Length: 207
Ligand code: PRP
Image (cartoon, rainbow, N blue to C red):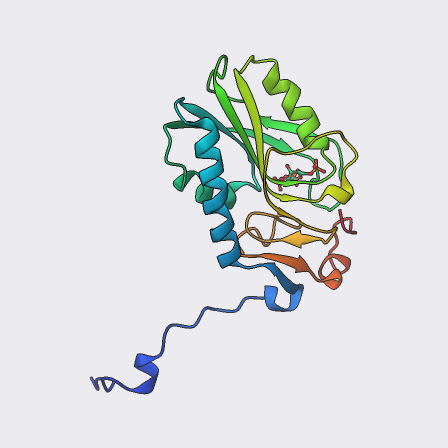
């Protein structure tokens, strides 16, 4: 069998990232991987400072928070326990709909310092339902951390204690955020091209 020649230009070249179908569907990158990584380190230091000296419980809302959560907690140099709450409001489309709880907490948070983590604070409807549910469990302290905040969309009186990025009212996907369950795996936050949701058979229109 013929051997491929060593040290040819193609062997020396760095592996190229595969470009997916999202190239046509994502209009532009809004927040890069690097920007996210740097911001998370700063957030983690702030949270460490505020929660130091006590074991915290991180409560993460499924599913969109998966990437942010993984990156945030690996930078938290604190003893912590992790639990998830399943909550879904949008079904497969983009319009805010009925809120459904799909998973309850397993850990007892009574008397604990709780950090509630979500990917995006949009209208605030999700948080306004989740917060009283957790408050009823009598934590010692409850703080909210979100990667993205869209203040212009807010209809509820809710603010987060820790915010990665404040963004305008763009329809964003990636880094955990979906449209019709797609794009969650993109390593950056991008603006979805209107054609991508207009062509979809799901109910359409920016959130
Ligand atoms: C998204 C997101 C937030 C919520 C924010 O959840 O993860 O939880 O919407 O919107 P709001 O402030 O208008 O309530 P979604 O129900 O889409 O589920 P997902 O996390 O599985 O994507």
